[in-house]
Length: 107
Image (tube, helix red, strand yellow):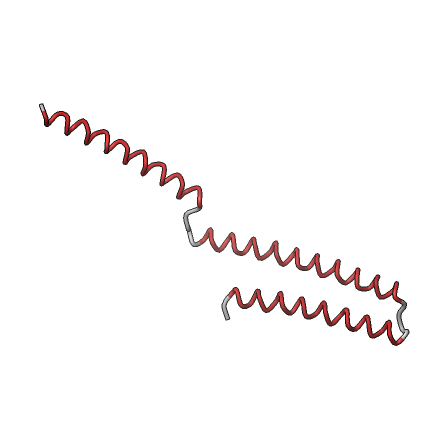
């Protein structure tokens, strides 16, 4: 299973869990074991906790991904832009030198 598939499964499981919690609370309300306000409060509390868990997961995942990319020693966008600028500058210098060389040959 790839990393993408693992993350996808975790997110889908989270969504499925939220739906099950809502269904469970709705059922308790229908049976009269909870009032609508109690049910709404429980849904709100559960949603807040789930969001905090998601934020923590997202932060941890970002940190792991950053560390992995750092270990892979891949060039950053800035690195590539700097190299492109250097290449362009060198290319311009070569063109100028070739122009001077051609002028010197004509004489």
